[in-house]
Amino acid sequence: MDSNPDREMSLIGHLTELRTRLIVCLLGLAAGVFLAFFIADPVLSLLTRPIRGMAREPDRTAALELHLAPDGTLSARAPGDLSQVSMRHFVLVVEDDPLTTATEGGRLLIGDPPTQRFYYHSPLDPIMIKLKVAMVVGVLLALPLILWQVWLFISPGLTAGERRVAKPILMGAVVLFPIGAVFAYGVIALLLRVMQHYAPPNIDPLLNIFDYLRVMTTMMLVFGVVFELPLVVAIAARVGLVTPAWLQTYRRHAYVVLAVAAMVLTPADPYSMLIALVPLIGLYELSVALARPMALLHERDARTAAFVD
Image (cartoon, rainbow, N blue to C red; front, side):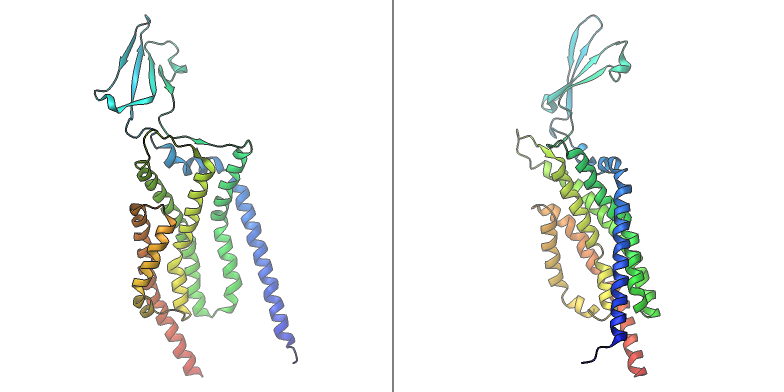
């Protein structure tokens, strides 16, 4: 069988261009991670805010105050309900202290802090924490460049009509991914509040920062990808892989799959599952709505092709 030189050259050209696009994407990702490393500290502060805002003793949020008078007299002040007083810390108030600026207004917190804290175990963990945060932020920073490279690779093979459809879809991906990540952040912050009420009494948490970041970043990346579902369905409908009728026929099956996905993506808690399931169902219904005009465009192209033939 004779080989086709033009076809071989075309294949080599596509592979060469694909390699170039991948190299640009990798360089963009590396640059994003490098830049993100310098803003890792404020990003880490934002990511850990849900935990740092949680009370160490949810049922004992009041603090016993010990007032030290200038003559050495010590007096205690407590709220009316002693069951609300913390068992871990109290506040020492130095009255008329000439060094109040050094003691934050004369108030000294004695004992454990009232809010949760993180811990790490290895001496190398601080730098690894920043690298982990930089990786996630670097992906978000490089996402527009990566999608642009995808567009440059696929656009030559598209018709003018397909370009008009695909370009806004890729632009929508840049918007939907951060929305999904922010949604995951809010879900985790809410779940932490719910999970705190299930904690057994007299058992203290030892929160490892790596465990927390793994859950947080994984959920943000997963929901960022999941929120791209309407765009994937729109593209599939545009090329004729799915139809709105098919999506409506298997709506119940899709809901079951989404319920399983919500159960896997969230802790084993019915409230958290429902919190994640509602937006997933909304994304599916949005996918059905977007599939209708995409299917009409596909049918128009099919009729045009048949008429030309």
